Image (cartoon, rainbow, N blue to C red; front, side):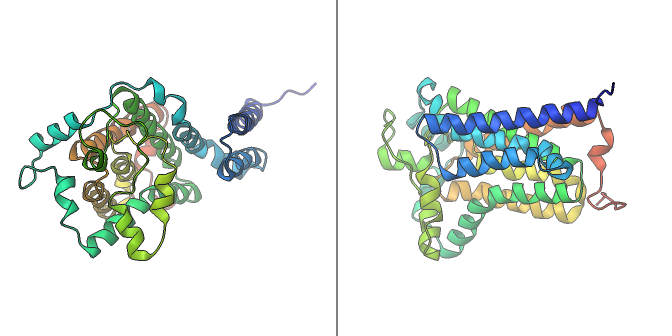
Length: 310
C-alpha cells in the first residue's frame, strides 16, 4: 500500500480549492447577471493553471492573491449599501485647512485652471501605468525565481483589502465630485467621471480612461488613494535590488502621487493615507512571511549569484 507525500497531497488540495474558487465565482457572477468576458477568462485561466503542471502551479501559488484582489474589487457593489456617512464638503474643508493652495483653494481645484499638455501626458501615462508596474515586477520576480514574488502579490492583496475596509468605514468623495456636485449630501446616482484624465484621452485620441472609469462601481472611494499605494508597494519590494531600482521606483511613485492631485481624483490627504496603507501592508506581509519563515528572502538578489546591495 502506497502513501502520498505531504507535498503531493498539499498540491492536490491546492488544485481543487483553487478550481472550486474559480468555478464558484464564475457561476456567481453569471447567476447575478454581471458576467463579463474578463470573468470567464480570469476564472477559467485560474482553473487551467491549477492543472497545467508544476511551473504554472508555482506561478499560481504566488499569483493567487492577485485573483482574490480582482474578485474583491469587482464585487464592491455587494456592500455599498452598508457604507457609513459619505464625506464630501467636510473632507474638502479639512484638506483646504491643512494643505491650502494659493487663494485658499485645495490643490486639486487649483490645478483645474493650470494645466499643461506635457503634464497631462506624463500624469495621464503614470495614472494608467501604475497597475502594470505591479504586474511587470511580479512577472520579473517569478521568472527570476525571486522569493519576493509571493510577498509582492500578498502585499498587493492586503493593501486593497485595507482600502476596501476604509471605503466602508470612511467613504469619501473625490475632489472632482465636490467641484461638480457641490459639498452637500452625497448624490448616490452620480456617475463616474474621468476628471483630469479626460485630457490624456483627448491628447492621444483614445478612450482608455473613459472606459476604465465607466466600470467604476464606487465613486466614493477616494480615501485612501490606491493609485498612490500601489507604487509604494513596488518601492518596498524593489528597494534592496539596488540604487537604480530605488531611484526609478521612487520617482514613479512620486509622479503617480502628484498625478492623483493634478488630475483631481484625490486630495493630498488621500495620497498620504494610500502611502500609509501601502507601508502597513508591506510590513505586515514582511513580518508574516519573511521574518518568521525565511529571513534570507529580505536580501535575496534579483539575479542568481548577484548582489542586492546598492
